[in-house]
Length: 79
Image (cartoon, rainbow, N blue to C red):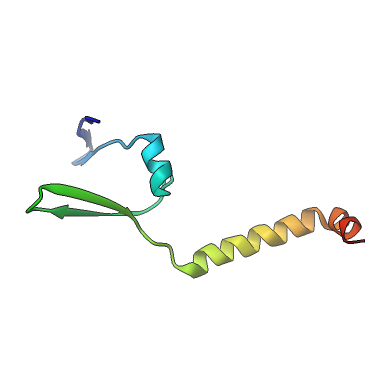
């Protein structure tokens, strides 16, 4: 795939196909690490690993919200 380097202010940007983002597990707004390998003349983009606590905190908040919202239904299902 051939992409164009775009001007973004004083910087540059290259777009990534939606499928590539999905395969890499990257979403819009995620932080990535960009590394230039001069000997290979390659640019490597890797997702920045999120600290486990951030993911766990979000899952805990979502779980609590789910339980609060569906408490009565969950009680009936538990019977």
